[in-house]
Structures are given as C-alpha cells and as structure tokens.
Length: 127
Image 1: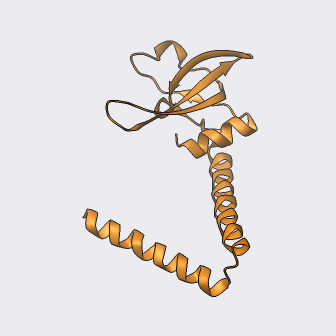
Image 2: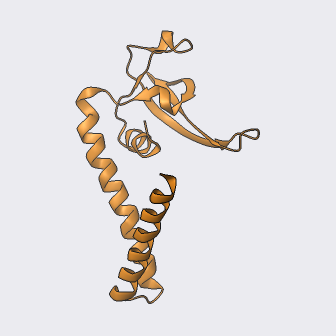
C-alpha cells in the first residue's frame, strides 16, 4: 500500500486487510480501519519507515508496516480513483502557488517542461 492509498482509506474509513507474514498471522482475514499514519526516519539506515495504526471496533489494534496492509478487492477501484483525485489536487495546489507568485501560463509551462526533462534525464542515468 502507498501512503496516498493509506491517506484515502483513513479519510473515507475504507476497510483494509493485513497480508499474512510470520508476525501478522493473527491479524489476517479481518477488516480494519486506519486510524493513524506514521512516517519516521530510521537512524541507522537513514531511510523512512512508514506504518499505520489499525483499528478494529473502535480500538487501536496494532501499528504495522504499511507494506503489510492492502485494500480489499471491492474497494480497489474506488481507492485508485480517489488517489488520482488527491494527486490532481496536489498538482493543482502547486500551480495555484505559482500563479500567486505572479507566474503566467508560459512561465509555468517552462517550469513543467524543465521538470519533465529532469525526470527523463534521471531515468536515463539509472539505466
């Protein structure tokens, strides 16, 4: 699960399920709600750790890694569409910020084109 999917599930109270692993066997086959999102940095690896706190019948059950949680089948398309809307709203907010700074359409297009070029260049370097 991505952080955006978790945000959507938390906001709209969609059910989530837990993947089976050695530490989550007792949590499998139940529907949970996400009540908290956590993002912290591991001091040793200098990487971010993302986790969610699951809720069952109004009680916090456990904090679990975000990769061990998934959206059940009937809600996948709904969550996917709402994630697209969320991303569109974020992009729109960035454009609004540029407009309030006094940028016009041509200047914004130049900024977007240069960012697209940067992304393409970094993908080519990774290969």
